[in-house]
Image (cartoon, rainbow, N blue to C red):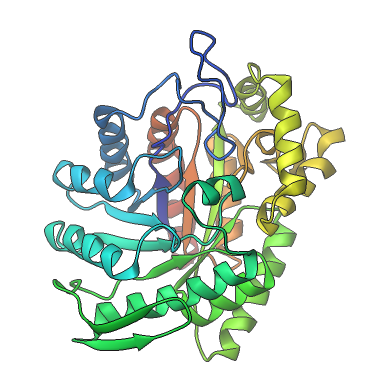
Length: 374
């Protein structure tokens, strides 16, 4: 069975991607969220609560709480949402360079304890060099991944061992322990497209997260990761992430997709292209190349697959565009590759996940159930 994940837009939200609020002097649009600090919809408690409750009602199992300089703090958000939901799990994105593993484990375990075991971990190695530098993290790409590997190893020990010492390259601990222990050992979600990132994922993670690409590219990537994991005598779970744009017809859906970018400022397109070429993220570069490859075809890169948002967004930017039935069929095609988790989001976030919950998720379950009864 496929498990559905969405995310909390804790940087802000709106109807348009890359639109600048002209009534504000704060004009910097974040390439990961597509909004500026004066976003049309601010990430208020009420708005993020509504998204969490809509996700739970709509059949999503998990809410990803992102990290970064433009985001609200993920642990603080989760602590406020625990009492507003009953079953929804919270996937905390955490950067090893921003907080000690023992401190994060204590905060995480507290939320897990008070929520009845609804906390999960997403370890994020990278981000933009500018964002990392703002947190005082100046390690190079390869060294960051070495630190990430040690960070995950320490978290696992904290989750399972009563007390231990650790003398590593990045962390030294004496008599480390964790109270309270999580109800169950939480899965570690992790993504990385570089060779060193894929090796860390194969050796240490439980769920390998990929941004959506073409079906062919994604098939190659998941098959490679299965082989890498087998080299460590391990099996991983896999998650794939997409934006979603729906319409009553395929034509209407692509009109809705084009509308998302109708207020994007030209300079943002140039800034994003420049950032993608100069940045260190292999994953961002892969998506940018897919976008360029699809430029002559209105950024269509496959059946119901659109890279238009990649002009503005870094990270998860490839969109499934079509009718609810078409999007459900595409999701099942990716599930057939070996994905048991699918992260879906869109603009504006609340209405998009409500529509996904009403029209797409039931159809996906219906397709899968019909196969099992044949």
